[in-house]
Each structure stands twice: as C-alpha cells, then as structure tokens.
Image 1 (tube, rainbow, N blue to C red):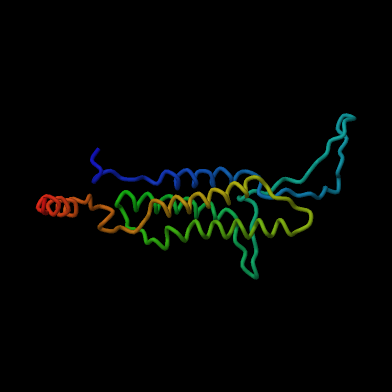
Image 2 (cartoon, one colour):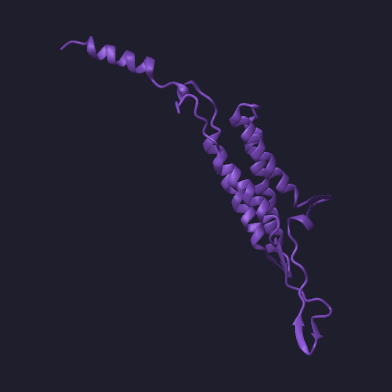
Length: 174
C-alpha cells in the first residue's frame, strides 16, 4: 500500500473505548459496611451477605447540585472512538478540541470519583474504576499521537527539498 493513501488508524483509541465499556460492568466502588442481617443461617451454614458493588451503570457522582451518572463516561468513550474513526476515515473532520476534550472529561470524571471514594469512610476503590481511568489516559495519549494537525511537512516526502539539495551539491565546485 502506498504511504500517501495509507491511513494510520488509531487502534489505541478503539481498544481504550472497549476497555472503558468492559470496565463499566466491573465494580467501581466496594462498600465496606455490613448489612443489618450480616449473617444468615441457611441450612445451618453461616453465610456472609455483603451489599452489591456499584458499577458505572448503577451509580452516579454529585458535584455541587449536579448529578451525573457514571455511565456517561461510557458514552464519552464510545463518542471519542466514533469521532476518531470518522476523522481518520475522512467522513467528518472532527475538531481537535473535541478529540482531546472527550478523554480529558473521562479522566477528570473518573479522577473525581476516585478522590471522592478515597476520602470517604466505608468505601473502597473498585477495579473497574481504576481500569476506566487508565483507559482514558491511554486514549488521550493515543489521540495526541495520532491526531496531530495536518501540515505540509507531514505529507511532503521531501521531493522538492531533496532535489534542490542534490542539484546544489552536484553543481557546486569540485
């Protein structure tokens, strides 16, 4: 394939978006409190019952008076993957601010939830939340590496420059 027609697909963005979707089903928060019926006796065997661990689909974060569901970051990850695909495929020239802003929002949202959980009593960080945070970081790095502004030097293979350099070398004094 010719380098002028080859597309550099941002596979890292697609993988990171898939990881965020996968992480949304994993626990984001572990609750350290026990339920009022801590031990149940079923058939003579004690059974510890712990509350279910919230994930991105059944939890939210409230900042001041604004409540945002945590599944919103899943939509942000999917939108970032779609916008990057559309921009790379030439279907839509996505603004660079949008391509960078989506994973930055995901990083800020997940970091805010991490800080809230880390500073509150009776809760612990879930693996899904940490995985989503790392995936958004990887997505941002991938977008920065693959969505550089288009410049002439990026597509210029140096034909004019190298020809001029070679002709000046050949015509120089010997």
